[in-house]
Image (cartoon, rainbow, N blue to C red; front, top):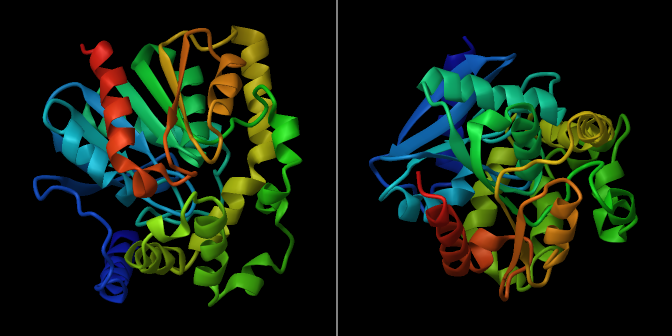
Length: 307
């Protein structure tokens, strides 16, 4: 029943976004649903070679990674899930702490019979990736984190004071009712204010993602991702105190008009082997604003550790 419902919703979403112009994944990519750990995760898989997991953030889905996947597939296997509650993954009532979502990644990799991977993550994907790397460090080769902080790590409390991040604390019994039917208005605020040039986040992409976030349960799941930050901070601080910093090679990328070099500062509080770099001319939405530079930076870093 769950799979039938997801398929029906997917068809409706595709119809609603028929005019959308998000870059498509190469035709050779396949999709599948992986059930386990209390959720059903929608996954795109393609390419050939060492595995790379791409984790998206809020305001987008795994669809954001199409330009990077098209490049890396030449010599990597790409595994691109939608986070639980978002995109075409199921919308469970709970489990939005990032430690639980790291378990979703484990479930996907185990189903695909993949052991060690490189990680490339953005926004909330950074937080899920950090939890996965902390709990399963033996399964992570190299790790790219892009333009978002990690709860409880480094200057987290100072970052929370930024008024642009009011949505981290947007909650209460009426939040879903306030945005119901107004998902595009709510999301436009993120796409506009976190862009160096708002027009870079195209109208086609806005139509596409707004339709996905208007699906039943999607906005609830998005709010739940943010509501879990306090628990995520507790989990991350406890892990760092008990185990110490991550030791795998890490690339911390910030958009020039967003986190910039602060990404490296954040990650040096949680990892010992950090290289920092900046995506020029970009705000937060790196794959929309400067995909060519982002792809080049990520590929260079992954190629330096080719397995």
